[in-house]
Length: 246
Image (cartoon, rainbow, N blue to C red):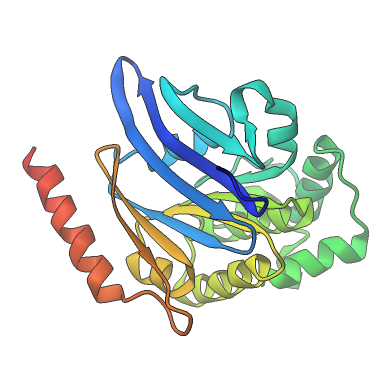
C-alpha cells in the first residue's frame, strides 16, 4: 500500500545488469518532506537504485514506483517529477554558469528569470565574479555547485542525488547539507546515495545501509537530533569488511 505522501517506493526490487544480480529484493520508501540517505560501498547497488527510479533499468522482479505510479509504464510522468543530479554532471565547457543554467532549463521546458538564476547561484554560494567564467576553468566543486543550482531551479517534487558533495570542500558540504534540509522542509522527497556516514546521519530522516545489493539495515532519526553516527558507522564498517572478504 502506498500512502498519499509516499513519493518513492521500491518493493522487493530485484535488478540484473550484465547477467548479475545487482539489487536483491530491496524495499524502501521516501515520503514528501523526507531525506533518505542510502549508504554503501562501491558496487553495493546505490546508483542502480537511482537509475531504477528513473526508468533506465527495468526490474527483474518486484516494483519501483514514483508518486504511486509504476515507473516502467509511466516514464514521461515519472521523469517530469524528478530532478537527477549525478556525481559528475555533464555541463558545457564553453558556456559560463548562467548560460549553462539557461540552456538546461530550456531543455527541461522550465522558465527562470535573471533574478531566479542569481538567487539559485547565491544559494549554492558560487562566487559572483565566477559566474561569467567558462566552465572549462571551474574546479569540480564549482561545477557541482552549478549542477545543484540547476536542480533547485527545476523545482521538482523529487530529487535524486548521486554523491552530491563529491568535490566540495568541508564548508561547501555543510552549506549543501543545510540547503538539502531546507528543500526537504518545503515538502520535497530527497533520495541521496553517499559514502559520507557523518553527513548522512546529520541531515537524513532515514539512512539505509546497502551491501552487495541487499538492504541490510535502516536507521530512523528521533524526533529531536540526528541519527547516531557511531551506530551507523559501526554497521557500515562491519558490512564493508564482510564485502571485502567475499
